[in-house]
Image (cartoon, rainbow, N blue to C red; front, side, top):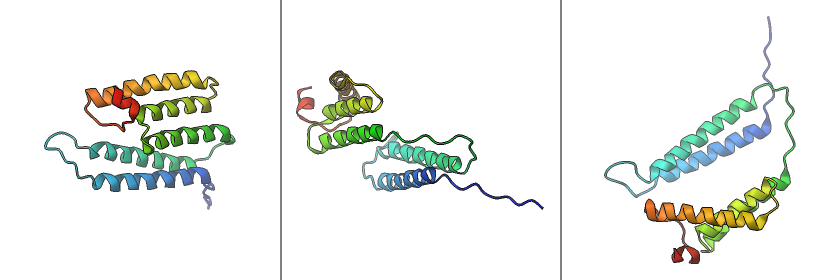
Length: 157
């Protein structure tokens, strides 16, 4: 008689799976409470339901990865890069919250994320992010008629 034993779970992967599942549940709850309805086609909540489904798939994938046997040793996290990405997301959220607009927020997001990946030219990356932010803003605002958060710069466009 053979006895089967389960491999101890990879705790970080299990924690990430639970966080993803929690975010998916909140996204589903938020999408179900949206009041804007359309008479034909997809409503505004369709994208939220898609994001929820995507997050659930990612969560299940992390759970599978947590219980698989692996001969590879996990690499140490690059906390400096994680810090830069946190600054990038904070810059986007902060610029929108303070009323500086989407374009400035996306420029900060691009520049600081590029810094997290090792680029050292913050000014050039900021300019690239600014151009990309303007293009994205114009596509969403003018072409698709979807409102993105506006600041002083977006009002000039």
